[in-house]
Image 1 (cartoon, one colour):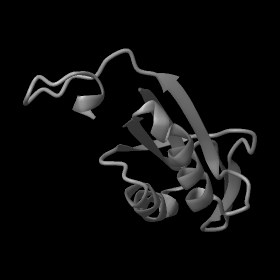
Image 2 (cartoon, rainbow, N blue to C red):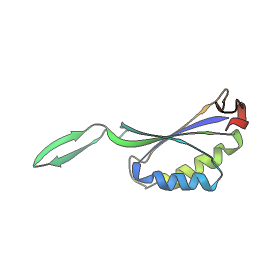
Image 3 (cartoon, rainbow, N blue to C red):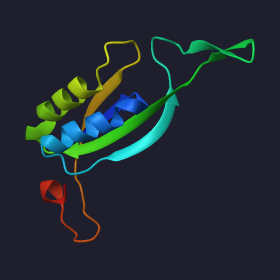
Image 4 (cartoon, one colour):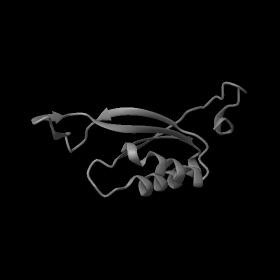
Length: 112
């Protein structure tokens, strides 16, 4: 089992959700976050004054998947979140030792 964490642009959330649903991903956790990468934020103009926006709004997705779904999930996220512009985001994949469904007590891949 793997945990996929993806940081994407907020307006791409619906596209990514639909792409993951099409490949059979059952659920995800979505969090509104702020951050920056190589672009280091940007400068905006507001009421004639220029100011620097250090932390850009992003959306973080956390998806627990079986090991055989990892490649398909990464491909779905990459294709649907790609705008071709800087700041499209990143995908992180880490291992999951165990998962427990609280309601039923199921563990492992049955809990996904």
